[in-house]
Length: 364
Image (cartoon, rainbow, N blue to C red; front, top):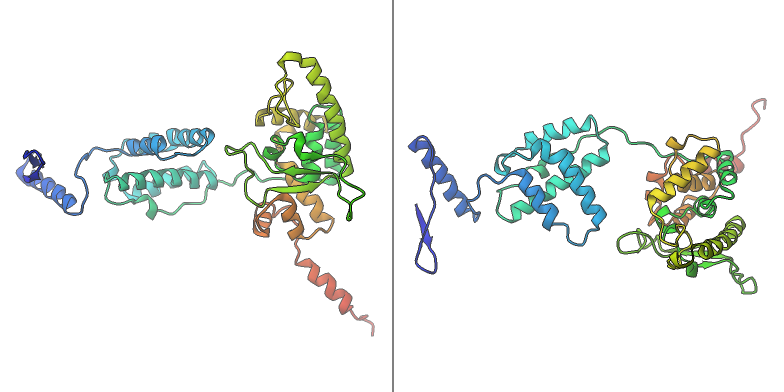
């Protein structure tokens, strides 16, 4: 069927073929309906795999290489093998529901959300480019997956054991700061000496304590996770002592490295002055955990931050103050993420009312 002409006068033709005239005509009518809806009618064989790969290649501008690699790994492991061969126009909500239900048996809810997001954005991208009429993925609910590994917090005795076990190690100051200030591991890895004040200004009114400026992180844009995460934290004396010792040890390492040393002004570095990565920190941390008598498989560096929240909460610090210290934009995140470490504030009302209205003696 002729549907129009090009500027050069050549006919624009749409064809359909099948084993019978009836089926061929039905296909042709479907193409014409697509044309009337403003959709392109080709290609009919565009697959889910092609849509996902296109989005991974062209739809992630501005994302970090680590993010793109993470999305690609998830797509190649879970989406393309299961749904990739399906023609996109034939993908149904039932297909997606069954796929998600199967994945819920082996993956966490967080991973399910990420997989759903990747597929949803891929199909939406294809929809915007007239490859499919509608996005059925957006119509599907995300099931509850397997529970993830719960975060834990060190008790006071365990925390003290870890601090003692880290003494003399290259990661001692890192552990002390993480546990006593609640800074994120990504923030400490980017900390520079120019953002460390080990003396403060005792003569000022009011006195200025020693502090660190948590203004950077190892994220793609070098900024902190949120605007509230950009903060200046006073240093406990134990942190000051650990940093002074660490600075002297780093000077010795710089001299030992000689020409191999790469100066970046970082507080925590490798043996040649370069930035630590997460694997460096995790490996050194596990050695300390094992020395402290704990199972290294059960603990990660981020749980020192959870321990910081737990210890402050156990000692009566209000939730709002804890949220400011850990750089959360509000108390909701603190309560949600660290809910096992927060002592319920609702108990405070009962304590105050007991003082206002003391219980009567039952004998009277």
